[in-house]
Length: 202
Image (cartoon, rainbow, N blue to C red; front, top):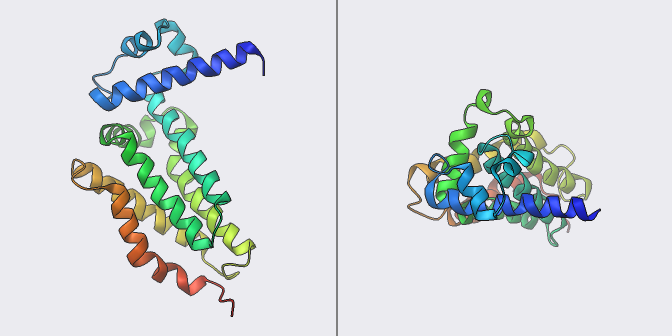
């Protein structure tokens, strides 16, 4: 990678970091591009080199972190259940740590896919379903889950649960911990959903 490319990556990261901090404090509606660029010491025009509009920053923050969580879950040492729980708890934990305000802004800007310009962001729901499908498919390939495991149904169901928890957390104004709620679900109910498909090794 050239020095110019490295500098471009660093500038983009600075814009994302500054935007995240300001949006978490003030909300997306009350955040201006000028504030973001001023915090980075760059011109407004530099912002448009990387993003079309400020909403794109929220989507970019979301995409990059969840890909990292998926990769870490796939490489996590342990059983299939431990990898799945790792993904679900870290999914919720990252959203909570990123702040309630940022999550609410993300929901506001993605709930109507017709208003989302970038195709990658339109597909966020299906990307998350795909991540859990990937973890389940890996479990089948490793011989941890039965060959007839209903991969797609399980993946959709678990994302329905995570997204439902996220929306309730948003609507409660962060009255409880999203991460802790997901852990409670995993501790209490996840085994009963997955156990019928686990391969027993006697």
